[in-house]
Length: 86
Image (cartoon, rainbow, N blue to C red; front, side, top):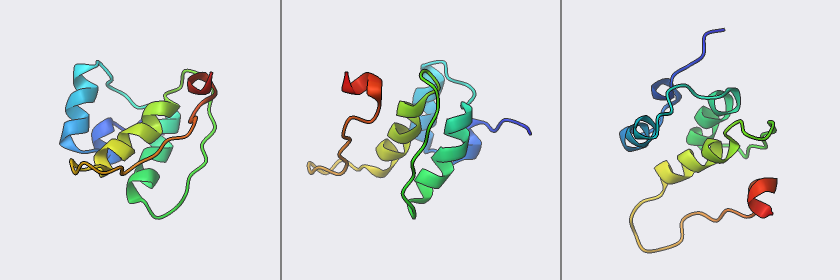
């Protein structure tokens, strides 16, 4: 199976520019599978993957794409990963 590009996952142009600036060129397996589902926004998602596989970006990038500059809370993340919880 051919690995998709970040462009094929449906992220915004702004997100794609940031990924390119940071040097990320190819999504990890968890990102490739989950980002399109999260961008659809119609279901809750529980994803499991090993440490260092990009889970934080996996849920963070779609959240950033959904948020607008409005001055109100639009997303709340509660201890998303064991590493961030520590």
